[in-house]
Image 1 (cartoon, protein in one colour):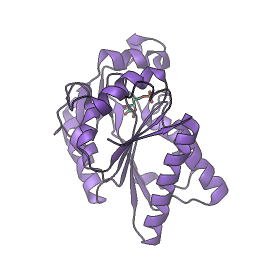
Image 2: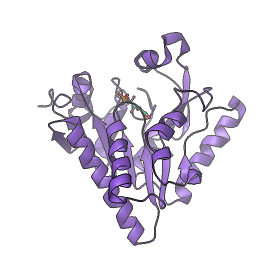
Image 3: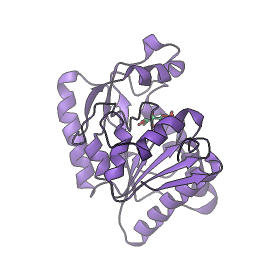
Image 4: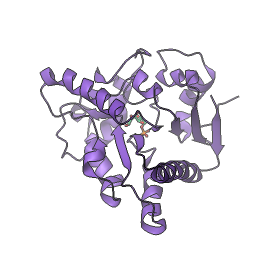
Length: 248
Ligand code: F6R
């Protein structure tokens, strides 16, 4: 699994934003959609900020961009401040000229009886747009990608999952306490992610160093879902020096 180590997260984010911008422009020239798989959380924020800057200062346009987010908390109204709908509006969508109807995020505000059909439709939608060209990922301290928690099968698809205790405790600050963190979420599956033509996983900081080592150098195992990326032919890790500090 190729790893690209940058001195700072800022430089790394710029490099990744440039790759995304190049893809968007190349697809524009061919009159095609650029289909992006997007992550939330603290890690990709600077990538989005850089894309917004390129839109404002360098004329990067998003008319041909279609996005599919990895995940959303289940049972959380999309207007709430902690929702990934809200995150994407604030960090990217409202700052660029992307078409609202091209921005797909799992809809978690629905009765459980409708979830299965919704997840199937999400997978179908991705296929309709020709699959994901570029998938951006973060990594949880437990090795999750999207909300594919330890134990997720490599053939898993978009589905309702139960959040891991570590995931919930890492989210507690944003929800003002553990009790308010949702217990479930809808996430793209491991197979959904592995079908993307290109996958770039970002990780910054010392607290990610241990899991980065396991994902890159350890065995491919369901206990570290990010290790599944070792089996992808066009995946890489883009990390900063602190996240790389345990690599041999
Ligand atoms: C978010 C997601 C998660 C995060 C991961 C890291 O859409 O799918 O897998 O990427 O939990 O979160 P941060 O970046 O906040 O450390």
